[in-house]
Image 1: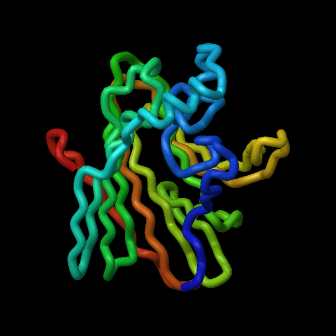
Image 2 (image 1 turned 90 degrees about the horizontal axis):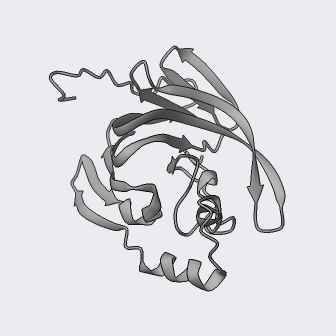
Image 3 (image 1 turned 180 degrees about the vertical axis):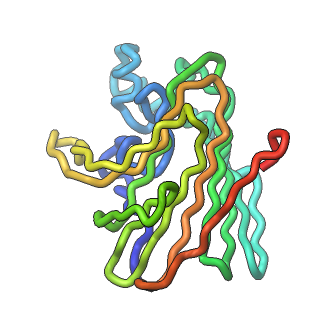
Length: 212
């Protein structure tokens, strides 16, 4: 309908927290030069660049069909090895007729970490039509985001001051975040959209012996 679903800063900020992805203990990816600073590694710019270019995140599966598209991305190597990330697979299932994107994040660590999955909606006007749905109202589109978490998952939807660029400036942005402290975590989210005034598709999730 002509509206963006999410905001993306491309590579202008160099900060993982400004993007629609994962933080581990508040720390971002190798391309985010502040990540190794937060870890206290004392690396100079040359050493940071070397680590960044060696990391090999990859697409491991991609399928496109008439009514759906499915993609699996392996982002494990994007994160500093000092965080002990064993696995970060992000699964995308795009259901075309329903105008819905299902996102499943498989996360495994060597130890317990605090994981933060962040979404940065393009629209900064939000509503909660029900207890499990965050709705973002754009010029032409309603975008609904559902996050399916257990009782240990903390979900927030609030404005943050994000560092913008490398000049120390800030920009305010609405961030939807799911956070959990665990060794391993499977997080599932659903994003759906429709014209203003039309109810976007909804998802009901069941967990049957670990099968969703």
